[in-house]
Image (cartoon, rainbow, N blue to C red; front, side, top):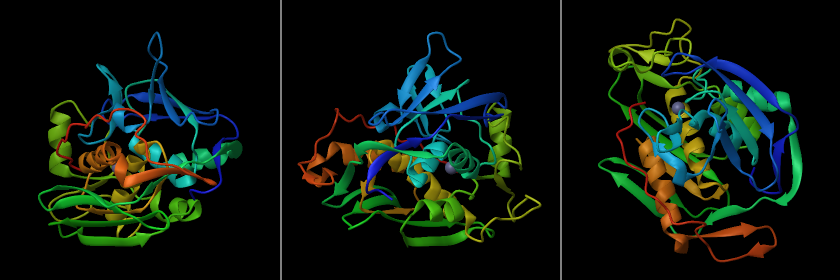
Amino acid sequence: MIGGVEHTLATSVQCTGIGLHTGRPVDLVLRPAAAGTGILFVRTDLEPQVRFPARGEWVSGTLLATSLGNGDVRISTVEHLISAFAGMGVDNCTVEVSGPELPIMDGSAAPFVYLIRQAGMRAQSRMRRRLVIRKPIEVREGNRSVRVVPSRSFKISIEIDYAHPAIGQQEISSLRLTPERYAREIAPARTFGFLKDVQMLQANGLGLGGSLQNAIVLDDQSVLNREGLRFPDEFARHKLLDLVGDLALLGLPLQGHVKGVRSGHGLHQALVAEIRANPGCWTVEVPGDVGPGRAPERPRVPRLIRQTG
Ligand SMILES: [Zn+2]
């Protein structure tokens, strides 16, 4: 998935959905972008428009979702779309959003994979750079951790453990992602939340767009969605989807084996910051070029906030 040349979309595509927190409609337009651009978000509802690159130093919060921002101006819930770009091998894209958060769609990345496939992909002339892990890097918070170790390819493992009868312990081990496998096995996995948290959020004016149409919702005993689960381990698959999106904020595809244990957005972003802060542990490589690791800018450690789902 990470070799070869960079890719962008063949054409522009758009959709409309509701924001998870505001409950309001928001328009999303994905446009092809030049090689070397990366993923660039644009708030088109502001005058002048405000732009954020999808990179770790722009992360402004990880509570409930990953937000990019600068001061008061934010774009929230970016991780599922960024995950879809990374999973499908889209390096460069301009993402126009008409509000402060991306549409939640069905709570998974499948609608974004559908959009990317509808647009089609175009190969570009620049070779795809990759960040190759040379020494292990780990971040830990109590019994939760995420680490990356050297590997000949990109592999990902995730372990979750919820004291809930419908979830329990789930594990995905050493998954090698291809676009086809991402689209089929990971992208459809939905985000999940607990009824008591949803009620608390809504009492505080958040999660107003949240419903059984865009999340798996659980009470103390079971899954409330009438259609049930899309996979027996949909929860672990969604955590893996989130991890792929959070890692993409490195700005380069990663070569290494990433292992998350009970991890969430906060810890994933702490790993991204830790990688950026330790350029001696990795190198950036272009096919035919082996150079020393270089941190593009001074890393900023994002705030670590408890993550809830
Ligand atoms: Zn998620």
